Length: 303
Ligand SMILES: NC(=O)c1ccc[n+]([C@@H]2O[C@H](COP(=O)([O-])OP(=O)(O)OC[C@H]3O[C@@H](n4cnc5c(N)ncnc54)[C@H](OP(=O)(O)O)[C@@H]3O)[C@@H](O)[C@H]2O)c1
Image (tube, rainbow, N blue to C red; front, side):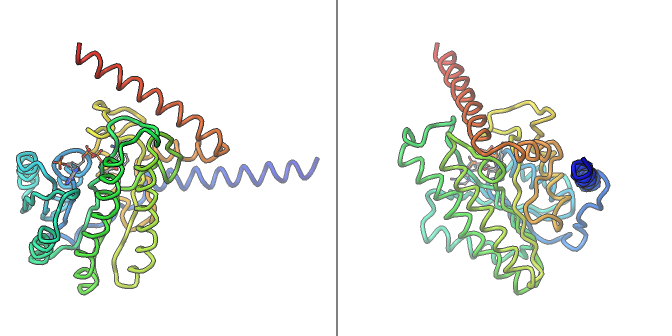
């Protein structure tokens, strides 16, 4: 069966090419150089803890000053101290992306326009506290997810990017998610929809802003340790927020949609070989399990 051998040989070559590219990308490729951005400002939304705080510290390590936005002022101050301990400047801005009025936005615009902002990390994001069926979600929660993950993210991008265009320099990252982009996410329907939106927005902007010297990237991790994931301990499949932020900042300027942590890319590759129906069933079962576990935990706490 000559044709079978030809198909086998082609498949082998294709697989070897992908494996070599994967190894190169994660372990041998030159990380993005942040030298040109030293001394300039990065704006990180949702920076009081979790992934946003990790990005803030990693950016400070690379010589950038960081404006930190979230609601919890004390936690923001803790992160600001960590930023300053790396020799960078910080600015703490208390801002509620779900409830900000037009006046609040105007004030934020003035504050940010007084800085030379070269980097925007659109990290702020909210989700349901446990995986929840679409029909059981409260309308108010749905609105909050859309408001923070889409409307507010879009708005701050429109505030910050024009100055980058003027200066023909900038990096804009969107914290999208593997769930919704690389895999379906039953029981996280609205959240994953917003993450797919952010991914689409990022890829469109990447095309629109490339000629202005601005790099736009969508970051699509799976689970990372944080309040949102409720996973405290890192493992092979679940990197720490610091690890994700570090890997992400190294991958800037390469893939437009980046899955920066190596094991997450393995998960995405395996999932991509499964028919969509199987992926949906698998993730639905996983999320139902997480919901039951979460409900059991909160029942135990109440006892
Ligand atoms: N963790 C994961 O497994 C994972 C996986 C893929 C993608 N992501 C994405 O990564 C991003 C960060 O996730 P995370 O896990 O670090 O989340 P997290 O632990 O819940 O942290 C969320 C951050 O956003 C801030 N925030 C929440 N609501 C806000 C509001 N209304 N106004 C202002 N700030 C607000 C929080 O601070 P305050 O409470 O102080 O306001 C906090 O700093 C999100 O966009 C998420 O979708 C996470």
